[in-house]
Length: 143
Image (cartoon, rainbow, N blue to C red):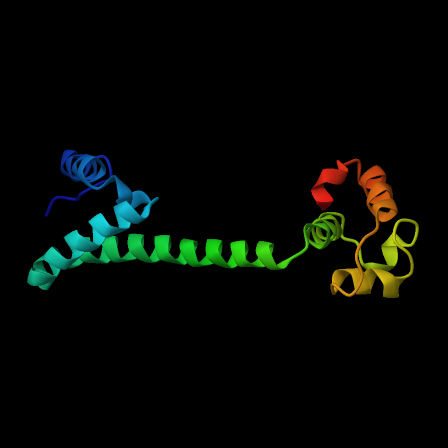
């Protein structure tokens, strides 16, 4: 029995053919590509046993795309729900490994920082100025 390697002509031919006819197998990047994949998948299901390898590959490509879309929708929702100032403050805290007690000079006591993070109080212009100076970022990130 002949051993097949990744560099064998047969493998190269199959990969080149798949890359040219179904480039989205590497990663679906639009709803149109997903729809194309689903149409092909529907046709391939008519002879499931013969097409199982390609069915599996297409299914995984569609699942990766749809999972990514769900994550993007969740991120968009979170951004819509969050005050940009709170989101920026949370990012700064995460990036610099800070907690609510680390902002006394810019915002005030821990309880005040907690109230800002919970949306009970808003950052003032003075807070934003001080935070921008400390982290050397534009105040625009808070708006």
